[in-house]
Length: 413
Image 1: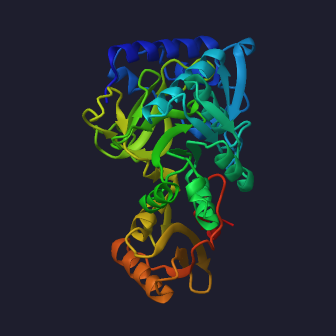
Image 2: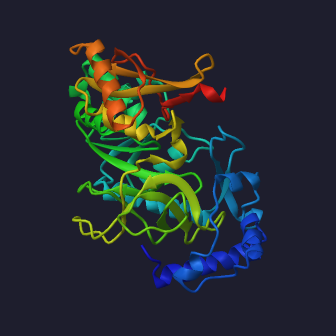
Image 3: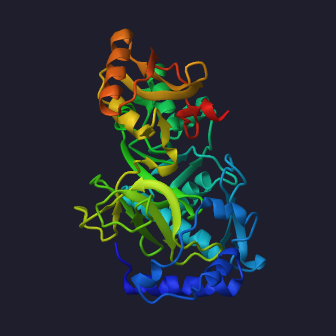
């Protein structure tokens, strides 16, 4: 997807503002001799930035406006290092609400809906983004935040919530609780807006079936406003993203070269009108592709395919590179296996070799021993790794209100 003329002008203006601000990235651009762009070729000479550099600018080195123009900050979790703090101007907050409202509208949600918001509030961008978009749309927000499943289900029934916003992990937990309690006929949900983590087709099918809802993938990340920069429409042919606010390119993560539309690679995002902390060529590490052509829904906005995983989620066992998404896809082929799994990797010092143990859930109607053997053989055949497989009853593995951690690499401990 090449830059259009207007996007080139907007990015040129962003570069000039960054340099004038003497911010962390303004200085970086000057060091590379970049003072503006006039073409795609100029743009592709700009070096990438990633989360490590944002952490280097902690706490507010990436701020590109005076303090008096900043009305809010948000932050990444900081679980793997210093958190990344992102300042927002009033325009940034308004633009984010506008994009989020556009997401709701694309999902067929209207001001007549009642939207129950379960993601967290606070420094994290999730809850407040879902709420701001809801209010901009004019729908009723039910700002529950995470946890307290008992209260969630009570409000869902009493207020006759029609839309649930959640991570896929929490949507799964709610679906299982509704199923367990036999209250499906008291639930009025029609749609689910799901974000924050990738999820398998098996999990998607279970949540849709058990809650009786249409599911919509919402995309976003803290560094680029937050959730709400893209969502799929009812044609389910990829996520439309708002190219009047952001520019997306796909690169080969190994070479950094831009790939053609339709080719899978790493998503790189440039903000076009962000004020508080503009980012140019930010490597997200999310893996997807731009879908060529026009969507059957008729919208002109370009589309991203579903997020396949992250380039930094890769782990290596016995010299083989593996992604959690590969495991999910293979588990989806085995009858009776749920969407939940856990991967533990350790090193056997005595034998001087790595060991991978895969714990999966299965329904009681299937033989656990046979299922374990099928999974073991399938991974050996397709991936080239032979894991130890443990099969446990459905509901054994922990459920999460946020993102579910799948891979535990004990070699790093």
